[in-house]
Image 1 (cartoon, helix red, strand yellow):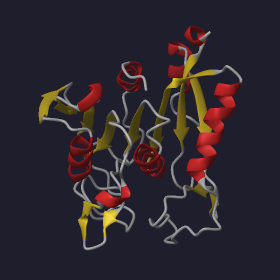
Image 2: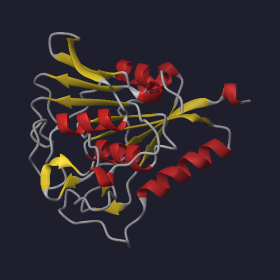
Image 3: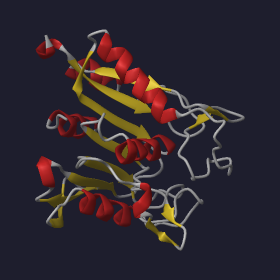
Length: 242
C-alpha cells in the first residue's frame, strides 16, 4: 500500500565528484531512501552533470552525444517506484555545487517528478541570460507546477559567489535566482529575514501558490562546502508532497 512507501531523496554530487552522500546519517535517522546518483559526462577526475547550454567545470558545453542526465534520474525514480521502494509523491532532490545546479535544473525541467528541491551552494533558476548574464533566462526554466525551493549558501563562497560573477556557468547572484523562483511560484511577499543563530540567517518568501515555499539559508563565513543544516533540510522536504 502507498502508506508504507518511503520518501526518496536523490542526492546529486558536485561537478568532478561522485555520489558519496553527505546526508546518509540523516536518512537512517529519519527513515527515507537516499539515492546517490553519478553524473554522465566523464572528466579527468570524476563526472559532470549535463545541463544543456551551460559549460561544465572543464569549460565545455554538453553536446547531443552526452548522456541525458535528466532522463537517467527519471528512470532511477521509476525503477525504485516500480519495485515498491519509494512513494513517487514524495521524491526530493538535493546536491552540492554542480549537484546543486543540477538539482535546480531538475526543478526547472522535471517538476512533475519532484515534490521539492534543495540546492546547496548551487541555486540556479535557469541559464544565465545571454544578453545580461546577471539575470536568469526565463525561457530556460519553466516548471509545470510551483516548486518548493530551499537553498543553502555560504557568504564566503568564492567558487559560486553569492553576489554573482565567477565562471560562465554561474554569473547571476543567488538573490536573482531566489527572486526568480519566488516569481515562478507566485509568492506574494518577501523576503522576510530572521536570524537562526550567530552565523545562520533565513530569508523566506510567502504566499506562494499551491503551498510552495521559497527559502534561503545563508551562513556567515561559510565557504564552498556542505553548509546545509540536514535537520532543517529534511523538515522542509517532509512538509511537501507532489
